[in-house]
Length: 307
Image 1: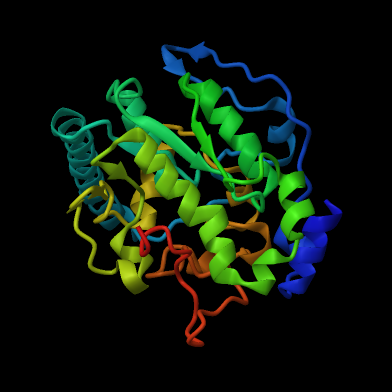
Image 2: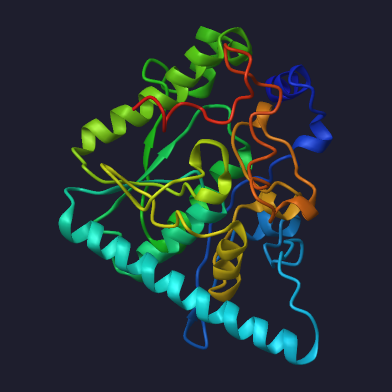
């Protein structure tokens, strides 16, 4: 915790505004109510982060009366199409590609894809890969345990190749390594572990949650992109939350306290709720205080640009 606080202060973020202290992990339980699988969330974690969608904003102004009714009908029709397309892409990927993998950072769009993979019965055909950078929010790792229990799978974990634990990384490179050389930090903690995961899997289909409305380098994404598959490329952030609400899907605890997207602790900030559903708004709290070597604003960590 002390090391995390030092990193956050160095990035210009206060500890209080950046994250809420983690709650100890306890055993998860999952049950059925009226034939529907309940979330089965960590009971202690849920005391702080209820995950009841009450703190999640919406983006559409539905209007009143007949306008509201008609607008919601159109939204439902669009959502049905998007879900049908998502299932089709995932099933096609499993059918025509070799050993597909899905990399998840456990943000909202990733939760949509994971839920769809489970609903399609593809968890035995699509490996779930998780990259631990050693600088993630504690709640992210807690949430990983939650979804593993909820869906009944075990993620394949990858991290810096020469450091088996966070403590080993800090001892070898220091807690402020990301400040000394951001490119080398990205490579050691994100790019190389991802490359290793893809190589070891022998995959020709890397499923990921990038979307066009993320903006920047992602603005023109297709669904099929060589050995990458972007199944929700044409979804919006609001579409993702509509899906999560509709299917009562577990979502990251820190969404409840103002984080629209989650990455490393030292470079992720909360985003005003009114900005969440705007173009590029979801990721506007990421890479805070970081620039590329040419001085431009940092918008990617390298895993999608250095493969």
